Image 1 (cartoon, helix red, strand yellow):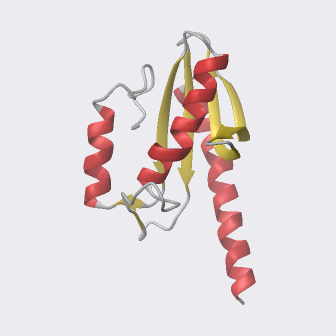
Image 2: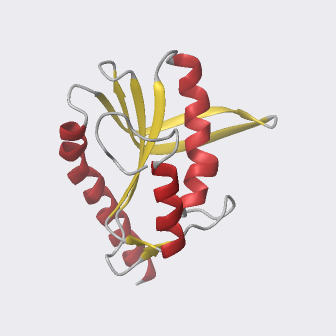
Length: 148
């Protein structure tokens, strides 16, 4: 039964990603959109790779938007967490996003690299406070008002 529950979670996540495509297309019209993009690079002499739900490149806005999606139950909470704990806000903003930003800063000169974290769940109070602080920072998305 456990395997079936895992499969159901994966299907829900895939469905959420598919449903978000037209939303992202509307938020950033004319952007090139890549789904499930894997980026690789060397960090501390080790090959590192992360997969990104969506990466949008807008030549009009001169922006690369890295999108993290979490299609969890509405009763679930995403914790602020730390840089060592996967599926937390800090994991994304301390590991996967900076990794993508470093790569795109090299290959997309002159583009602002920003992030967007979207979920069907909710955030813990600490997570919400942290995201609000990030929203006021340099990470803020320029054209579409997406919460960082």
